[in-house]
Length: 242
Image (tube, rainbow, N blue to C red; front, side, top):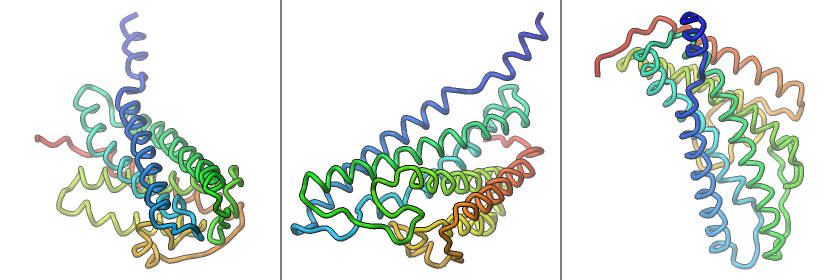
């Protein structure tokens, strides 16, 4: 009986850290949305030719990647110290990544829809998108799919960097280079040079394509590489005394 209870307890997902991170994501999205709408109104001068949310949403992959790395760096060692195995912790992180990325993609998509309504109320013409897999504010399915794949890649890369930095504060930062290569592939899904970090992503390799099959193929490969690298780094990482 005690062995069965121990097994059930070991499989329990740490929902509290996930819930905290999801609430943070929601509040950050709400703040970014309000800020974008206010800035668009101020600088519009009666006409708008670009999507303000299209620019602001360029920060989403960076945020998701950072939070995935933070989850790996901060929470995983704490779980191990409290009796969970590294394998269980990596499973927990593997659950966290798709949930967090899916909510992020959903919120980004919702932001585009709300911007479409906002533009209509303000009397501005709806803009088109030439550097994405979607072309208008109402293409919600390809919009969600594009951001989901991109955020998953960034989350996997962020976890890899977070685990590496925890393992070695001196050399862990070197994994930023291979992580950047993974996220460069994510940039190939469109919007590679847009957003507040365009000055960086414009320096990444770009393989522009409008093929969904290519998007899915490259995305799955990059996500798998990021997760395998994270597992390889964290599986025997010793705990540090803080």
